[in-house]
Amino acid sequence: MSGEPFAQKFMRATGRLRYFFGPANRSAMDHEMTEDNKRLLSEREAETEQWVTMTRPDGSTYVVPKDPGDQSLR
Image (cartoon, rainbow, N blue to C red; front, side, top):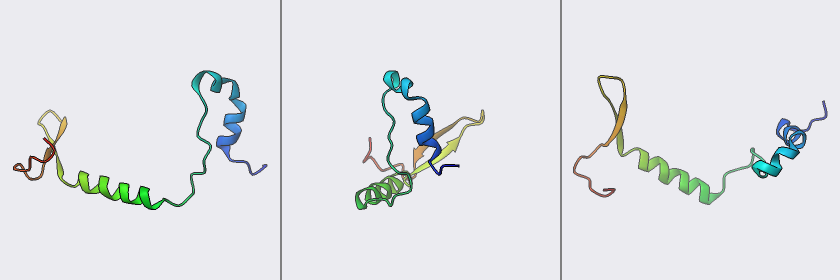
């Protein structure tokens, strides 16, 4: 085994397809998150905490605000 990541082998083998579908991102997946990304992630997590998932009798789901009086996102 050459130690080359599978994604790089795959992209080299499918190089002609990139002509039609565009290039793939070849950045490393094991890097540390930047401060901007950490801040953005915490903001998104805080946004999701203001919603509650409700289930209808037929099994389908929908989201509603935890605080019905909150009109900030409407």
